[in-house]
Length: 347
Image (cartoon, rainbow, N blue to C red; front, side, top):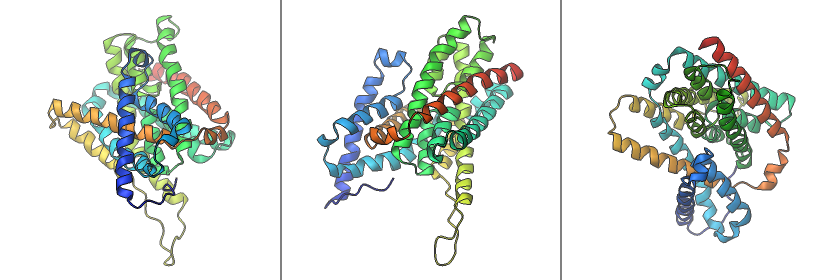
């Protein structure tokens, strides 16, 4: 999406005002997300943020000075990249080792298969545009809304495409969060608690949804599920690097008079993610500081999602039609059946 086509005598002031405005909305969103009803449904502040942002952007946008759009756009792009980088503070090498080979293998197979199959099914079978198909597949394969945001930044996709992808994460992630524990307790998912934790961590979309669903079983299942999920999150970095290389190859045509090829679009925020994950693994950050940084990061991600919602128009979302939801259904089935078969094989 291009920069807002606005004329302003003081763009920096407008940008700051827009960022502060989004920050105030995000603060209200965080408070809303802590209410018992929202927490019980497993909705993270990120999901609540994009919903509230879309409602504001479509019905109340006229109450915001148009020039503040600079700041909204800045938040949805620049602040987003910083927040994704700091998300690396949520994982560590120790966590990945602790879950063992079954959890690592589960994460690796799920991420690659769902991302590749989702993109191919979306573009070839359902005739969805590449960006929407890839964003939807990334949300299902890796870590829900956070993965959609990271891919959106690399693909430079339009906001409404990200919003549609996040909608599938919310719908099918919420469904799996409630249904899988019920099926397990009814004996329809024939796994022991540890294997079921691997299943949840490998198949449920959002981190918050994984925690909410696993907590219905016991603490040990929750721990295993969370670590497997964070292993999927860790794969975000190599996947983004491969995506950048693929985009460079796919568009490798001369762009200037000298015939130079476009540079490899390495997502610096993905490198930051990896570096901060390694710093977190070294345990050099005091626990209170680490917790404060994680809380700040969730707030920044919430700001980015809220800004993304403000920039999204329902009319653009409707253009995607029902095909994106069909893709979401297919990916949900692939995750559930494929994940169950994989766990039975390796756990």
